[in-house]
Each structure stands twice: as structure tokens, then as C-alpha cells.
Image (cartoon, rainbow, N blue to C red):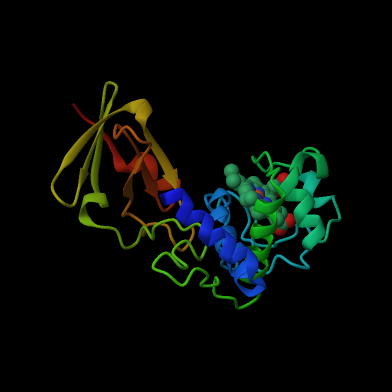
Length: 232
Ligand code: HEC
């Protein structure tokens, strides 16, 4: 039942060029989920990978606000356009050996075409990520990956105190709760970007699926050991 409904929709989409394009964009927006954990579409909002805003026409490896390009990408001389991006998405290692993007590539031509169509719109200067599907899901993933703004977190994420005793960290948050973590399950991190926490106000962010792991994210490295009291 569900499948046949999908086939009817697919047939309708394929039969009208305008809709076919909308369909590609919607699919591309959805498939951008493969990239969004590492790439935002907002200018200079860099994550593990560089922001993709303004990508078309950019020289590879040259975004000034991104500090972690590989020598290989910097030296590649690639200008990003439809063709070079298609080759990069197909097999980054083949196009630029020794690049440092941890991504295997997308072998399906149709998936790449949809992603390219979406990215071309969504990375245009001044672009709002396109509202594609029009339905309730339209644009939901728009804007690319986003990390939560750690200056505006709920009390259960605001760290008040951290103690360390033998192999255990205990983290007390503003809602009055204290959670205990095996020391190898609590990671101490920093975020100095505008999404990072205020100085002296680290945030507790759960990590992983099991519920036994979390990150405490500080504004700067110097805050970390000062915030942890050795006490049993
Ligand atoms: C796990 C993280 C990760 C994922 C997933 C990922 N990327 Fe990347 N991407 C990176 C990193 C890191 C770099 C920098 C690589 C280097 O310098 O060698 C990069 C570089 C790029 C660049 C070059 C940008 C520039 O300014 O030269 C493009 C384009 C790109 N990625 C597109 C994508 C697309 C499209 C996807 C999804 C299909 C994707 N990436 C998935 C981490 C990622």
C-alpha cells in the first residue's frame, strides 16, 4: 500500500519537469544529512569541516576562517563548480589523495545530482536554504548542521560543579541534579565559537546512545582543571 503510493508519486514527479526539479531539491536537502554533521551552510560557521556557504567559485582549501585544511587540499588548485564537486562527492580520495575529509563518497549518480542541485541553491551568497517540499518537513533540515547554542541551555545542562574521586566525575547542574560518570566516559572539551558557552559557565551535553557518556564543554582550555575539584 505504502509502496504503491510512493510509486504513483514518483511517476508524477518524473512526468513534470518543474516537479522533477523540486523532487531533486527535496531529496538533495534530505541527503545533505550525510554532510551536515560536519558542514554548515552559514557563512564562516565552521564545524569539523569548513562552512560550505558561497562554495561555487571558491578555491579549494582557502576559506580564511577555517584553520584545519589539509596541505593536499590547499595545494590542489581546484575551483569548486558543478564538475569538480561531482568528482569530489564521488570519491574525495581519488580526486585529492591525502585530503582529510573522512567521507567515502557517494556512488549513486542520482543522489549526487540531487545533492548538487540542493547545495547550489543553499550555498548561494545570501541564500536561505530553499524550502523544498512545502509540506511540514520542508526546510526542516535547512541551514545545515547546527550545534546547540551553549549560551542558552536549560538548567539541566548548566554545570555548577564538577568533582573527581578515584575513577569518577560527579557533575552537578543548575537543576540541582548530580550525575556520576566513569572518568573515561566524560569528555572535557572547549568551544570558543559564538555557539560556545559563556566563560565560567560550562555546559553538560549528553553524548552517544547509551546515556552513560557526556561532554562538558568549556569556553577555554584554561578553565578546565580549575573547574574540577578533587574530592571524595
Ligand atoms: C566527518 C566529517 C565530514 C563529512 C561527513 C563531510 N565532510 Fe566535507 N569536509 C570535511 C573536512 C574535514 C574537510 C577539509 C578536508 C581537507 O582539508 O582535506 C572537508 C572539505 C569539504 C569541501 C571542500 C571545501 C573547501 O573550502 O575547499 C567540500 C566541498 C565538502 N567537504 C563537501 C562535503 C559534502 C557535500 C559532504 C556530504 C556529501 C561532505 N563534505 C561530508 C569533513 C566532512
